[in-house]
View (cartoon, one colour):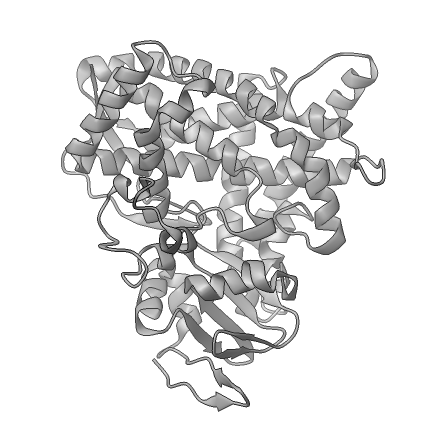
Length: 454
């Protein structure tokens, strides 16, 4: 770790040894942990003219995402992602972002999430029926693959209703996987000269164009159906009909595409990864799994969980929260500074690239007691104090907090409760589970599990 130097009234951010951006691209999680441990939660990642900073101290994160959020925008560091997501909520800034947030908010009303809960129940029942041969034979089921499959079904049904047949669903999933892989490769290109060609760029654009065509076709079909007086209660219809309460404007097809693209790409992978990690953690901690099953049996009494049951499934929710602490769905957020700023004691120049890492914060012993231990009870009311709340932000902070957080948590809680009601789940013998960065954080080679009917 480099030493800090005085710059006027502020201190220059210390740098890290070696070639940090290369190390970050090759092993982002290992690098973030090393840098966070060495520094004070704010380190400079120097590479030639590129000015990049890694932030993980909760106070500095709050300053950037809440206290002086207007100075930290979704700038050029997001260009590789913006190529796919366009100018939706995840990538936009300023007045346009505020307008889109107003238009999007009704689509995430509690009524929409309640309707989605019914889809979750149907989807899990169908999936569990398909697992019957593997359960009977004692052969492994890949929980990551199954969680992704269930979640994509839920997202498609929630977004588009019943208009997406099995063939189109498979095509959308395949294209989404291609786009996600391209986004992951592009995320670190902010430090590569713009004139330098990057591998896979042409294939990335082709997969975006193909997914574009699918989504625009769905939008056109739904607009036509609504114009004919058909009634739909899915998110796409809600977004098409949403009016800005301040201006009366509605979204264009391009704006609808960008928001659907964002929900589609960001929604299914993040929740599926969280559910998968939860089962891995519960498999490693049988006492926690037993408490989860006891709660599910006591609260539900053998009937399927419904949205109204979630407040009573308190330990299930703690399992979800602790899973997202250890394995945050989006381990890194990206911002760009507009003007010079002082964060804590440190000087941050304008035009800098900012990487915010909840993964590093969530694993830092300066902010969490015994942070590597899976302990759902750290989210019990008597323990989840103001210090913990500041150091926990798997879905962001402030006004840019993920609009889909309630939906993601609802899906995760319902999936886990429903499966726990029917099966004991344990990681298959001999499986070594490691993580990989793919915009979200996933088990590198899936998660083969053995399901035993209860």
